[in-house]
Length: 185
Image 1 (cartoon, rainbow, N blue to C red):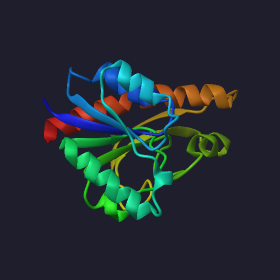
Image 2: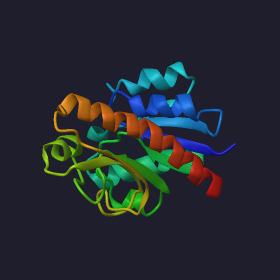
Image 3: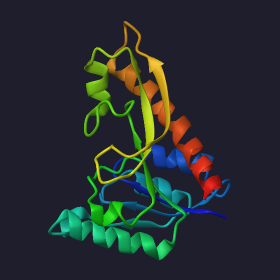
Image 4: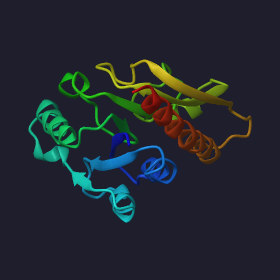
């Protein structure tokens, strides 16, 4: 069975979705790694019997030294793919040059790269919005797009309803992307 490592920083809703749709069905999530010792996703992974490693970025003097430790930790699991699902770290070439990984981003890239993508997309004049899954590269949110799904922003859209649509699409296309990529691997 193909193996993935999931990286997350927060509540772990996308991690929980991957566990529900993929774990021990299409692949094994052999480890979940977080940079946040307080992340809600830790309990979600442990509840599914998935090992969790906490690698706190605040324990490292630079992004590069953190990324080197992260690469070393990932290598211990020998995954076929690394999936960033809400991992809120800008990664350096120390990571991007060594790890085959994909990222979930809540906008139609190349629009709204970086932080606060949902809010910036919602506040924009763009009528068509959505979510992207892309390869992680040296450029922030700049890797080749693997899959995108869009929707049309309604005139009476609220940030809450807009965010809910984004989350639903994330929960749809991230597992589909992982399945497709693991079939190719």
